[in-house]
Figure 1 (cartoon, protein in one colour):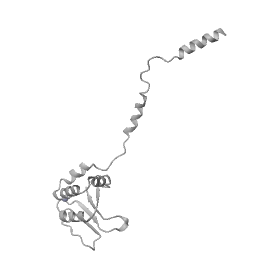
Figure 2 (cartoon, protein in one colour):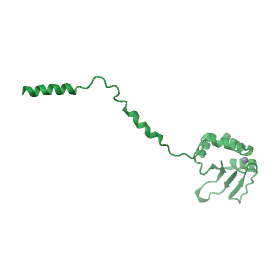
Figure 3 (cartoon, protein in one colour):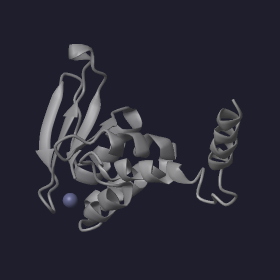
Figure 4 (cartoon, helix red, strand yellow):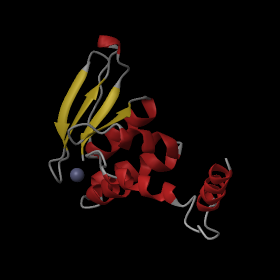
Length: 143
Ligand SMILES: [Zn+2]
């Protein structure tokens, strides 16, 4: 019986945790490495779009005028939605006027779709003027 108790004593002694264990609790850092796997992002940044338009006087005029007269969030959203290099903006009367002024496109009431390009840099754009396909009128331009 006495022997047993002695063994217990040593066992307890051995189990005593070492005083210094400073790195405990810092382990969580290792999980960060997972973040390096970014999904491929093909949409350009706002600045990227602006600089692409800057190469042409007409196109940069259109974009600048659009950005100045709208909520900045509109442009941000539009940039996020760029698909296959087409920037899509909601086409309202204000933008119709702007497109007309910039590219000389005349909108007729019977028109439902206009496909054209910038007379200066040949940048293609599309104006969808009716409400078909459950999509509101839009102005789509290559970036
Ligand atoms: Zn242009």
